[in-house]
Image (cartoon, rainbow, N blue to C red; front, top):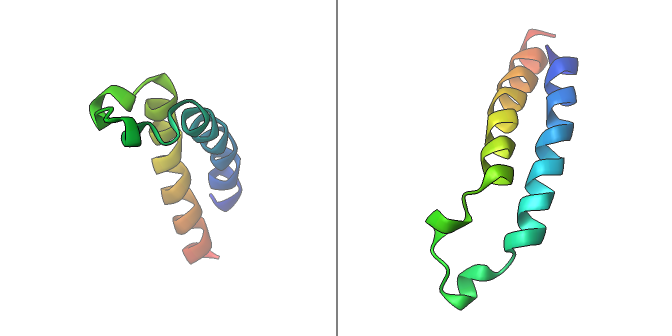
Length: 62
């Protein structure tokens, strides 16, 4: 489970880096957080939550 969680961590970082590169510091311009939830953010969370859970479960069980 630990290895699977670490493998899921890779696409999480890719999607979240793409999201940050596109939306970095838009809140200073008054852009609402709701409008920043696009494809990259959603897929970053979809991969990120299982990656965290699998990594924690794998680390605890070893």
